[in-house]
Image (tube, rainbow, N blue to C red):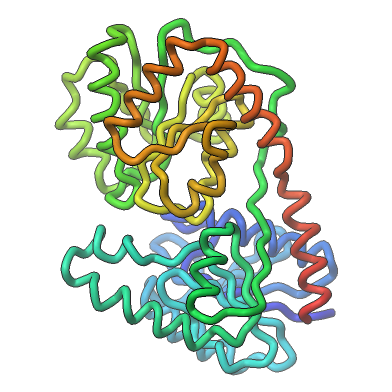
Length: 352
């Protein structure tokens, strides 16, 4: 039985887990099904055990989201004849010199550093590139062409793109939507996701389409400030965190998903929305350039003013809108976690 050690700053039960952790969990489950012994080392969030087993995967937790990289490195040093998946999120676990290690990276942080930290983030942008340079001799897995290009610029040669899957079967046809124009923002409410630009776009749309609505779904550090600022804004509803059933119910009823992120690894929610026949209007940034097929399954724009203009134009052209929705459904049908797991196991068998 081949031993596999996954090193990731967060586990699947971490309160701030995201698409990267869901993706990693699917890979881990595929390894278990393949007959591997899988451990996942991560930080220890409040309320989580030091060690537990989930779906056959042994979770080991120690340190916070920064110190866990040091503890994970020490843990990896003790592993003999073990295949190591080092997940790089702005910083890795320093296994670049280990023969049986690969790097898994969803996106480079780049703009994230300065968006979250201001001037302090500038040196971290260069530190990240230096750290990635140390990994350039290792095989790499990523989820998009955008990140693949970023890695090639650093000097990576052996890169495999394995796309995200989705956790629901796409609809067979366009569903019935809300009667009034309904927009949805779905994701973490934090600076790098730029949720306020979705509201700004909506305010411009309301000048033309008076009965338009905007659903803000998700939680995060900006939830309370934005809710307080826009609590009296007609048409804006803050839904908070949605479970999977609620998420897809809202995506199915909405006409457009608004994605004003400054960067994405891929844009998992885009494909989830597409599976419900909902096209995305997103910023023309890395990650979204991959998940949104501009002019086919959605539209890429440069700012919230252009986002508003595209929504207004498409709302006035129902034929064009329906074509986008149908193409979005076709696009979503290409993705599944089954496909992701199959591609990863084929890769694992080549690299181990």
